[in-house]
Length: 81
Image (cartoon, rainbow, N blue to C red):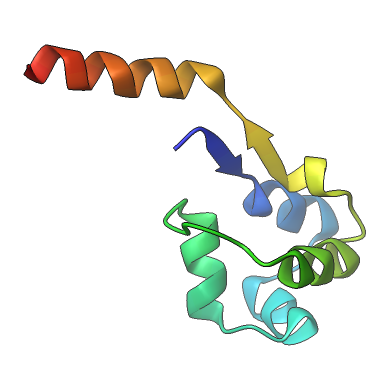
């Protein structure tokens, strides 16, 4: 996926644990783990807003678009054909 979620970076900057973020945002640690590991297919704006509020950051601080990852995915697909 070309969108990288940098929650770990912001947690480290804020010296906050996953447990604390989970409590502040109101979602399970399992769901935060899914986000952190890049396995989430989508995120609600309300959840993104709550995460940004808890981490005192902007969406761009935790979401990063990487075009080079898309190109790598296409190369893998083409090499299989």
